[in-house]
Image 1 (tube, rainbow, N blue to C red):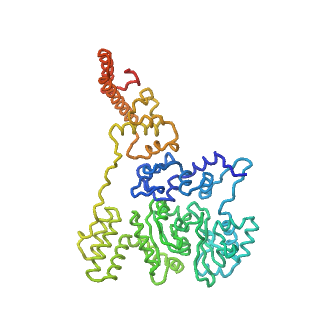
Image 2: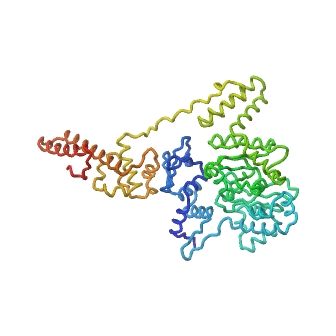
Image 3: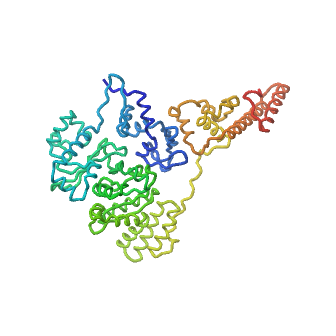
Length: 555
């Protein structure tokens, strides 16, 4: 029998989820008043038109009109069925779904990984070589326990554990714990390696990193890409560092697992690491949701580390992040410095990190001068630095232009970033009457209590342009794109009670004037028309003097 999730359980899951956090794990969102904006993932666009409303719990794109609740987003983005999307969110946010009687919850997709991790942790204590390696690196028992560091034994032991816990091999392969060799023969992805479990931002185990203890050519390996594991959207120890980052307003991004473990051991609990890759666009939402901390890139000073730092600094500065770069020279890394007791030196390095823009500008100048030399090198550097400055915000670019000019020995006028200008007003800018109707409708949607004393003055007839929208008041915005669009449009502001009264009066005045124009152009008896016009004029005069009139009282 298929798994039937209880509707109450689905609603409880939705109440638990933060729609900004969920969607922000897929795309970069920026606060815009009470809502959040980003570039729509469902169609190509350069100017953000995708809006997330945390108060109402829905998203809406003004460009392609996509919209719905948090489950709908995951369905559309991941191309999943409804139940699949619900189960995915429940797994990622560690929420226990309830199922209808006679229906059974499927095993979580990371079940095999959890079983293997228990095995790895248990085995570490019985493997002297692995324990000695960690001891030699200076890792304390407390950190081994906190980070659940383990050891991956031979294949038959891992297969036996899966069999013992009745976990089918296809599930272990799907989760990335095993792979298929020639002839479809399964083999563990991690053998004879110290293991570092990797969790998603919600703390759910999704993969491993492993450090060989033998002569394997790959010193470190990660889990393979899977439905659970995407290294471009994960940061090692993110779930452990989160609270510390929110407190210190700083995020340290190191290169390796051991660096992170040792930094935490030394009191730098805000440290994380990318998983064998430089920071990418996919990591930015993870950092954004930590309330935009200052980011310190703590990378090796070798060629690979410098290249990774340059790419990450360019990316982070272009997206408005603050922070800087620390390069570790002379073969040392953060883990070595902690082991050597150089904690104060580490603090000084982090506090003196070179700002992203300074690092990038210095790198661009160094590369150009190395390639060309002399006046031609300076000209190439000027062009490259100018192009970089134009990726920054106007104020940042203006400030860093002076630094670049001093490094190049040139006048800052030759490095002034091009004018960023204001965006042209939208073609959909609304006439005053349009704004009045929409602001009234939005207020009634957001603050239905305000209409209780004004209900007798309201009617669909007041709305010349948006009568159909007014008729949808009381409906679910998730079912009506027009309501989502209005609620997401931060150009339309809700009104106070007094402002609402005045807007209703203005709409009544506009309606009366339309009726009077229509009567004047209608064929018919002059006396009858004059009587009706005098009655409407009397009502109009009262409205213009500030009174509100009951709907239909002038007819």
